[in-house]
Image (tube, rainbow, N blue to C red; front, top):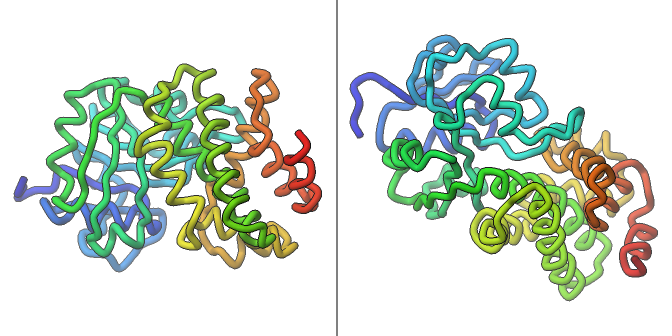
Length: 300
């Protein structure tokens, strides 16, 4: 694609939004916008961006409902959601929130292992574009550069659960590392976390294959094993007995796992789903001693 007029825009200019803007700009002019002006090539105002046929929305999960209510006008745009999380206040998945504004055939969700810092360097990665419409996947696929390989999946809920849950497990893994529990413990935590993630997703109709591939295992292994992950760094801070307020202030970015842990905790209680790791993450975020949390995990 070499469009003379841009037909695609990224909404949200955080690190992930900027990385996607960089990637998509390799093949065609791509606009980008955010609440505050940024010195980025092809930065534009929101209304100009919303007039594009294709939109990549990369705003924090907890802000999406209000943003849609205040800003979005459906002009039959094709939407690619680049946020990962579950709304804490309602327990709703992002596809449920978007369904009030966008038809199923016009929406897809990104999943897979993809640190923004590496994407913006043009390093290779693979992503899954999840949509109930394969036609929509085929429309979005050509926008991506050669260094990003894309796959198709129709399992929207599987991608959503995996993308949200892995952030919570990354916090747990960061706590494990911060307590110097060793690689055996960390590997055990991550692998049992994958089982837990699948158990949770299965309850909501997700496919097992999503958790064994890029969306689940791939993204989890990446996010739960590197200080490049902001959620992992939250866990490290918690293990050092820092307050959550200070951790988030030092982070200077949104760590989606914090609010998502609350959503998973509430949903697991409501639906009677066994989620011991996610539950302990929520309790530690609420102030429980991480060492006591570990003891309870080992005996549960």
